[in-house]
Length: 250
Image (tube, rainbow, N blue to C red; front, side):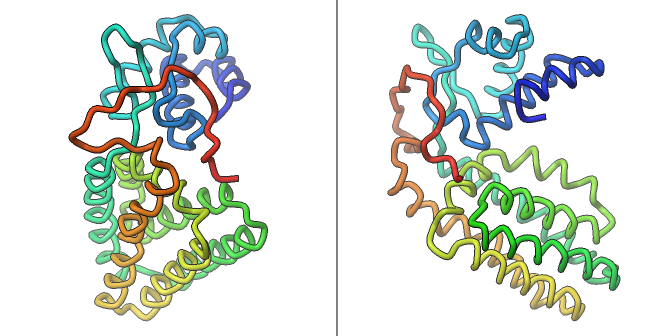
């Protein structure tokens, strides 16, 4: 459910409206459909989604708590700009959980697990050939979720997903960088190879190097899209216009 139509269909099936609105807005912010700095109007969002203002207001409160929305008194509500400190914190949580899972995965991995991971690698190569960064992003998510499932702690991926919202915005901006998809696939392949060999030391080295790649790309991303970032200690006056992101990967 990542669209107005999906929201209405889910409501018809009896799902909670506030939860659906929160899920939709969160997805649009992470996908950069609602770009950092864009104004958010309760009235406009309620009209666009064909819901009352209450679930929109409650969703914006939740998004503020997650650091994805900023509220400025006398100015309004805006999609939060990206901060490096938020990216670093999300990366720390993600790395801690995924590395812990990998240590158990090395002792539990089966031939079926390896085959499933290699199937995802093949699909990633197809997405690269089509230059389909959206498909690649989703396949990347599936790859890491499947890798965590090998450890026997697949449910922990939900915790990772909740923690890495800020990181995902930077990841989406990094995908169009030259040769980025090819590099990510090569790193994924290295992780699977080391996992298949049950080589914990090299598997950890490969996964850690892969997970930290986005941190090394942040300055390149900031140089390309400075309007989407905020210096951690310098308040940035929000833009008042609401528009879809021109930086969203295609």
